[in-house]
Amino acid sequence: MRICGIKLTHDGATALVEDGRLIFSIEQEKRDSNPRYQTIDNLDVIVEALTEHGLDPRDIDEFVIDGWDGEVESQFQVLSGASPIRLKGAPYLERHADRLLASRDGSGLVLDDRVFPYKSYPHVTGHVAAAYCTSPFAKAEQPAFCLVWDSCIFPRLYYVHPRGGRFIQTLFPLIGHAYAAAGHHFGPYRQINRTNWDLGIAGKLMAYVALGFVDESIVAVFHELYEERFAGESEGAHRYRAESNNATCSLQAMHDFFDASAIRLKAKRAEDVITSFHFFVERLLVQEMTSALQRHSSLSGQHNLCIAGGCGLNIKWNSALRASGLFDTVWVPPFANNSGSAIGAACSALAAHRGFVPVEWSVYSGPTMQHGDIPSGWKVSPCGMDGLAKIIAANKPVLFLEGRAELGPRALGGRSILAAATSAGTKDHLNHIKGRDYFRPVAPICLEERAPDIFDPGTPDPYMLFDHQTRAEWRNKIPAVVHLDGSARLQTIPRTSEHKVAELLVEYEKLTGIPLLCNTSANRYGRGFFPDVAAACQWGRVEHIWCDGLLWIKASATARPSAEPALSN
Image 1 (cartoon, helix red, strand yellow):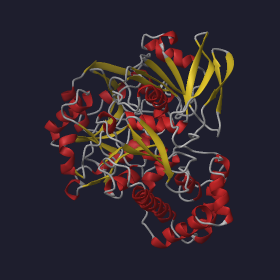
Image 2 (tube, helix red, strand yellow):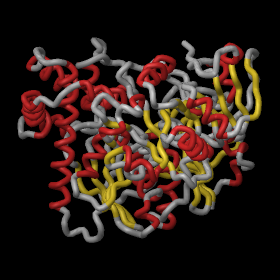
Image 3 (cartoon, helix red, strand yellow):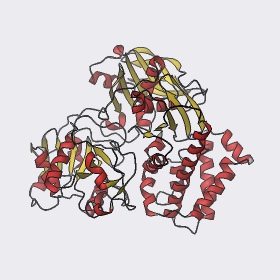
Image 4 (cartoon, one colour):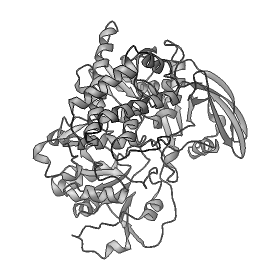
């Protein structure tokens, strides 16, 4: 059975699941260096994705559209070719606790001048299904709790097992956008006009918190205002919770919360305010999760946890839940945010047919490498991993393109810029060429079996979804990947992996004794990954580009002595 999942709104994507195996998931931002969070405005891109994999829309057994904003239904205005069409979908949330897989039937999906029926499941259902069906718990047929915390909803806890799933409870009344909203009021992203919403702020704040310290007097202010405005029994708090499905009202309430906080915290450093708010939410998350598990202690089985929704990309909160001792295992998919919603739509339909069964998948299931015209000024020659390791060891960053792109927002060796981590200046240089804030960290990609020697805990983390501390004896050896608080957003990869980046790490370790490299995404600022070598050459800020056994070198770089860093501005 072939199921095509479609995410039309931001982080638009098309995914195909065939007989329980993920064939592809094409996120629109990863096509043609599109802007981040690109929507699907024209249904022709769905036909294009299918055609690239040798399929026609008539080959699909079921089309599924991810639900979106709305209490009863969602609506989408899109094009099919030049023709505007209107589609209706499921709402954001399931309408009944025990009907997670209740769908809305639709018609009028026009693909390649043919009209197809479709189903639509609530947006949160897709998050639950994508997280559980790709987890080790599904494969082991074990039940799991699933935390979904997204944008304008409160954190919601579900219980899932192979035969079904249901909503258990809301953990606490704080929308997922609360973290980003704090950045509109304090720190470097403060805005007077708060009507424009920057979806990237939350990730930037996760780095910014390393500049500050937890101040319990600040935490106390946040706690007092949270009880007064959100969680307590005041008229305003009741009204806020009653309007929780209204995104506009929820966001305005968050801004009012931070306006009130700013009056009382005006003497405090912005760094400490943001760090203290982060800690306040982290503590609240662990406390309320503890209470929820106690309340639902009758649910038998191992205590496994899946995390989904945009807040699932917060590595520090993920790590706090894992370190709490509440769960035997914590699973976060690399596409925890809406980049995985097309996958989730397909998994929802699969679950409706067969139950929450495991889906076979690979993180390298994104777009294949495209082919464009290389601009003048670049020389190309064959290059193996041993030769590439020598270039990197000479402190020359390499833009590394291998196979199909990664799923989700983080570069994992398929669309990466790799560099030696032995110089502190490398982080500054990479942030400069990427147009990023100086305090943003650069992640390490490390051979899995060596990671515990260098990081604490250093446990396998193939998708950069947990926080690790760099061990003291290594901090001066690899300063480029050590964040201001000593942490690292680690990616591990087994030495035996067939991916070329693993072979490169092995060769680099032979040469230097260091089993890791800096890893940051290969993309223009505010855009998706480079789709091909041509796009990377046109950007031109890294002078060595490797792809499929070939190395492109910018002409200006060939004249430099080999020991001199090939740094560009």
